[in-house]
Length: 111
Image 1 (cartoon, rainbow, N blue to C red):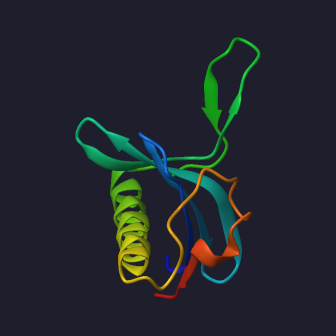
Image 2 (spheres, rainbow, N blue to C red):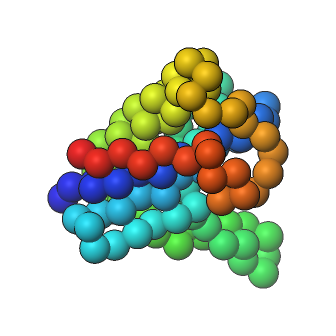
């Protein structure tokens, strides 16, 4: 499996650091991954929906730990590259706008 594109939208928030959309094999897109700053560092949360009982259920997710770690590594690397672009002045600093509102902060990366 190959991640052929990763799009990152940065956020200026305490825990929510950004959103990611990934494309698999130039054929399948997963949108709405969240980049979260947790107690042990950065991790990604899969897109989810709220159930009637108030809990959340992932809509799409890896089915094994190896794939999750691989995907998380790729997304976090793309996130750090996007932060570097902000530091270099290539794109504006993040805001708390919704994903896609600020197209200047979207990174397209092919692997």
